[in-house]
Length: 287
Ligand SMILES: [Zn+2]
Image 1 (tube, protein in one colour):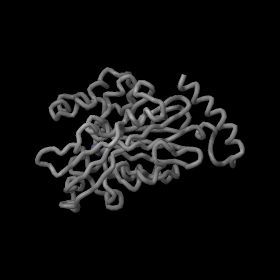
Image 2 (cartoon, helix red, strand yellow):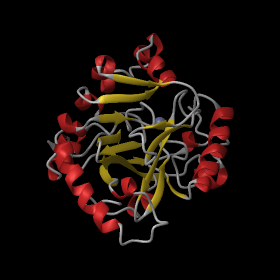
Image 3 (tube, protein in one colour):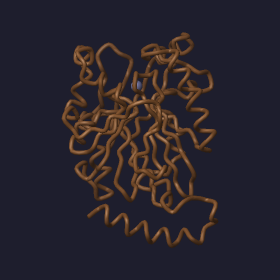
Image 4 (cartoon, protein in one colour):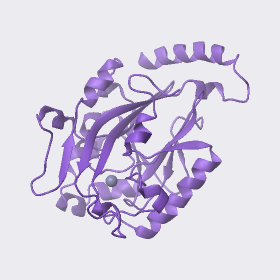
């Protein structure tokens, strides 16, 4: 039903788009909407672990944790699911003992989706830049969606090592979800029309990915996961100490910069508050 409604809206918009300059976009791009949803914030007392050159030692950082909903006539894609919405029930958020860090969720993802008349069961596709708890914190709500995942990230997701490190619980329900494994190096075209594509950017984790979204009126944006977690990271090419591979991370930074240039895309560093704030405030959408 929902998809049919979206198609009707799309056809109406396509008619409107015919009056716009022809060079701007294809009719399909007209129908893509990107919603930036606030799914938490993390306050770091010391962001030293975000740079293996030691340059961030003792520097505090304030970061945002977003979720993105991409609405396309062929379905909805949730890209990154934020911190667990259970944190919203904790009056002062979460302060892990002995660590200079504070996690907070002001509004549940399910409440935000509800504002659009959606529940997690309505979301056709789910994908994550990677599976860390601040990107896949609500993954278990989407076990009924089709999970689009880099093959290497999927292989590591339920490994003995991942279990040992306690990483699995926040996405455990995906183990038996309908899954599309993204193999190889080529981009994965989510809806088959080039408007929404997943690109390889390994290094932070072995199968870390970024998302390219092309909208009709606002152009293209690149959601870059944890490639550049802090506002200082991109300019200074900072590599977090816990990344899986320094070499791959630096290579991915180059690739994603080139992709942004080629596709004329605006880079959105997902945890950087000003990048998030530059997107339309939910429930408005970039389109
Ligand atoms: Zn991460």
